[in-house]
Image (tube, rainbow, N blue to C red; front, side, top):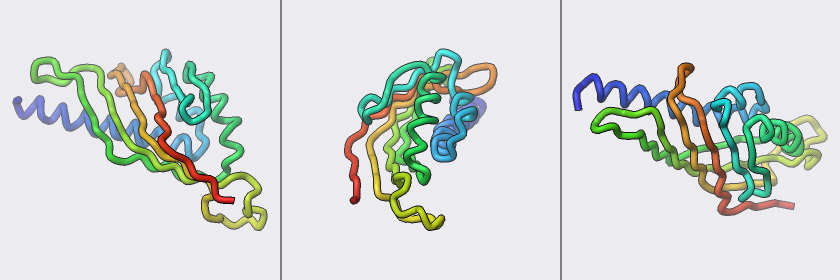
Length: 156
């Protein structure tokens, strides 16, 4: 590889990492416009392994906006990111896949938060994401997100 290709690959990896981090922040902050903006127009999301829905990003974002009201406190952690860029004979292509683990502690609405203070989470889910991305004119965008929930815990 040349230095130019190496630099392009590093820049792609950083941009992809920013999209994945942006995904977590958008979900945690309930910023559904930012969530939608992370996807291509044909983007799809699959939350079925976590008891959710699968479908086009706009439909899933609307579902999330309603569902996440149950969890006013959430902190989405996405770790162990494995980024695989399409390889075009030594040069990066226009698609990528990311495998990443998640830990998602949340607080159920009304569960001790009546005092107005932030309280510890009482619901935790964890598993692995599969992100698919494409390079677009606006930069890297998600084409598909699939959640593979491995476990969850509800403290009562």
